[in-house]
Length: 186
Length: 186
Image 1 (cartoon, rainbow over the protein chains, first blue to last red):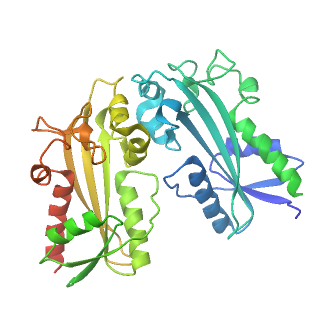
Image 2 (image 1 turned 60 degrees about the vertical axis):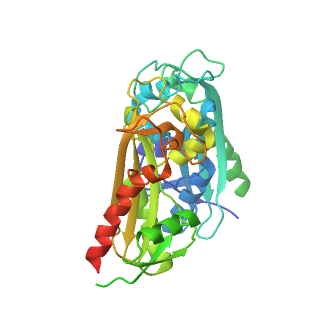
Image 3 (image 1 turned 90 degrees about the vertical axis):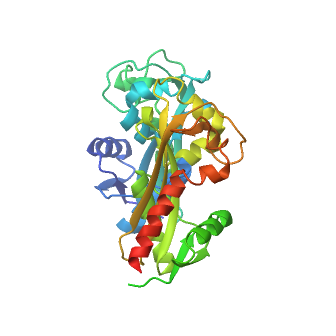
């Protein structure tokens, strides 16, 4: 099949612009902001259900994107529920959740889901970045970035210059996989 | 309206038997075990979405039941997500999550949702029991019972004799509200 047009279902204009830039030359990306229900389950189950729902509403090929932050001491939780914990506890509280656990390692995961249309099974493109959960450092400007220090760096996501973060992040890794996947669809 | 028959959507036979006993003389309770998706959201949003789904599948009046355990230091989280944390962390790990927080208070909540049928708005009957999250004590036989010590007692749910637990629990409080609600429907 040849895919010319793809809808990114997101309400986030920055994510849209960035994704359009990354996928230019591969596919025309337009956008719809639709309220999608998120289910409880594993990161993968959450992403699949959401993308399936988006494809049914848009009635055509779509991508959706989910991010999570897992703590290894909690076997990957909060993971897909991280946004609720961030909202209530702020970055400080996320770090405090691990006070009773020796293992401070964790991972950031970005799951991009692609679905061809209603009735089709979504395909997942996952980017995972391993690191450590640390006391918040750097500007408190974006989500849980201040508490996540990726392996190989002595700075948190919040402290890293964006041109460095953007080439090592969970999101970058997922987008790289998406580019390969979409190229092979053409 | 006069309600003679009501379906309790649960896969748990013990819960069914107990509920049948509690509601005998008020309503005939039958049972269906249906896989219901649980959404992410507040305790109330989760219960409403689940009950609405159940009423659509059963095509008639239904009740569903949800329980949660919230930590006040985490503004009520894990709350509706407690089962995922219990599964991965066991009672020991739930207690450890609060190691970094001074406030060890929490609350157990049981949300029974009633929906008349497809297209009707679910009604929530909530029972909340406040208490403290403690190091696990008592038999590890039921869920997070070993870490929850209700206010006014020096024993955890797991340590309390069932005849005492059953007359003070979050579930008892919700069922009492349900009984009043159903009686007034007759």
